[in-house]
Structure formats: structure tokens, C-alpha cells
Image 1 (cartoon, rainbow, N blue to C red):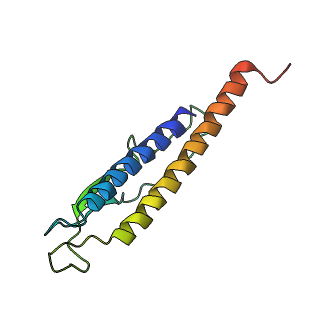
Image 2 (tube, rainbow, N blue to C red; image 1 turned 90 degrees about the vertical axis):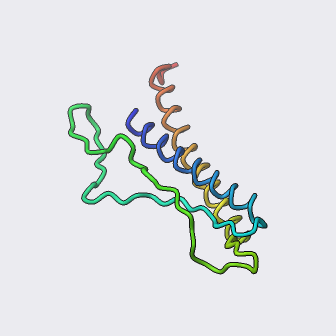
Length: 124
């Protein structure tokens, strides 16, 4: 169960960094020669996360399943000032991050609710 929580926490950390990059892009939308930041997940060759249901099962879930890198995006259209931030695209990306964050927190809330039910007992 706690491996699931660690997995969700790692994803939330990734979303936090992505959110900060988008906020930086929006804050610098009119800064001359600013190049937008993007956060990309790093691909892992051959890693397939396996779900385990028993502590004795072998798990190949890495410690940090969501490793990422922050890059400067030098592609896309640039304005006359050399800036390549598209405010509409950033706002859409910001909404995507918010929806993913909400989904993951609901999953985590369900895990904790299940744990609370087990601790308290289901009998009256």
C-alpha cells in the first residue's frame, strides 16, 4: 500500500515542477528573448512497473518512478521580440496539470480512507 503512496507522491512532485515551469512561462510571456520551459519525463528502457499484492513479491518499481528533466523549448513560433511563449497553450497545459493533480489526490484519498476503515474496523 505504501509503495502506491510513494508512486503517487512521485507523480505529484513531477506535477509540481511542471506547474512551476508553466507559471514561469506565463510570468515571462512578454519578456524579450525568453524561451519557454518544458518538463519532460525521462524514458526508462525495459522498466515495466509491476503491482505487488504481497510484501514477499518482487517489485521492480523504481524509487523515483517519475524522473524528469527541465528543458528550454527553442522550437515553435517566436514573436518579433524572440519570445516563444503561447499564453493559450500554457493555460491549457496548466488546466491539464490541475486535473491530473486532482485525480491523483482523489486516488490517494481513497487509499487513506481504506486504511482508516481497516484501522477503525468495519463492525459497529
